Length: 465
Ligand code: UDX
Ligand code: ADP
Image 1 (cartoon, rainbow, N blue to C red):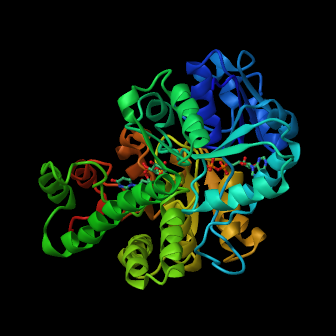
Image 2: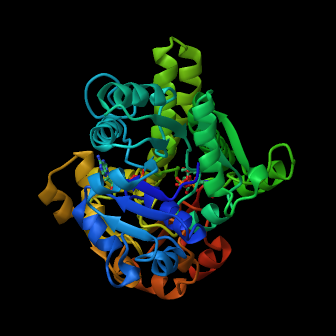
């Protein structure tokens, strides 16, 4: 089975970059990326490729090379489904905000809508690829919808979770540690699996393309994210202990990370992990374990989230405590709003929670982020529902210039590890701030000795004062 036409439903952080890479590496395949969001598609099609809706190093160049040749962005979902041999489902699967499983389970309504649309439109056999992160056994639900509502055509379902990390999406897609493809145990299932293996084999070495059954593939995605998040929560738990014992969390991380069994990655203590996946996937894992009555398993993984919430709150509390137990009416500059550097994504970013805490303490919060728009920042705060739309805009200011953020500020807090923060002239910043000038480094990013020499009072995660 040779794939000639791919459709991807969902032009977001997963669908957009992944399909761009497939188009770039497989010039013989036509790739149609479709989305119901007109504005998003218009940006993907903007004549200036720098305006594509997702900021990822190297992505706009790749879009520029492929768009209009074999990569197309459109809102015509039906036409793209109709033409395709293979359909990737890359729609969002947020945590449910209502009903059974509220706050825990993944909301599969967008997936289900896609399946129903595919079933209604398809007039030829299709391979359906689950790309979005999904609870284990979602493929079963997909199959049931497709088989019971379709036009009598055959659907083969594959699970092909995406492991790219934001900010490094292009390099991750170019050189993945592995590509995982789960398929059904039948002749048709194996042929479908092979068809997708052949797509990736255009640039990924065959030994890095793993094939498993569908359920293992679905569960592996949740497990990978749970393990990564667990490492961050583990080192963050130790960071609090370091702060009271004169140990230095960076030194501890280096010491344990050089044990090859532990490894050095994902041991950077921080103000807490964010992003669209870690929290959502763990909650999802916890929910699944609970639904099978596996309460100890559920409690074990839930602790990773509890620790992460604690870390964000503890950082915000530390700011208040250090500023003489009150931040009411004090200007606090938050440097960074994205959940990590090199992305404009803010989903579950620690900054949102730190800002919310400080606003509750009546601080005057000013935010500077090099890539995130003010609309996004206000929409993140509004989403929390802590205060009204108007109040959020009155109490929090977003500025485009870092010096404006720190002007007459009582404190500055680093919340995202943007490289540019390392290259700021901290002496000028110090001169612009009120004294004593406090600096809270939530990313262990800056040179604290130099800052102290300038005159700052520095607090950093994972090292006592
Ligand atoms: C993650 C997974 O890495 C990726 O494989 C999956 O496909 C999607 O979820 P992503 O959310 O883009 O990717 O970012 P990641 O680099 O994993 O970082 C997640 C969060 O953890 C960020 O807020 C980051 O700042 C934080 N983090 C990461 C730490 O605080 N310390 C670390 O050592 C590593
Ligand atoms: P992810 O990080 O998983 O890529 P995003 O929220 O960035 O998530 O992107 C998911 C995209 O899927 C959004 O642009 C959304 O408009 C789109 N989407 C959701 N449901 C549908 C649907 N039924 N048909 C087409 N696109 C959809």
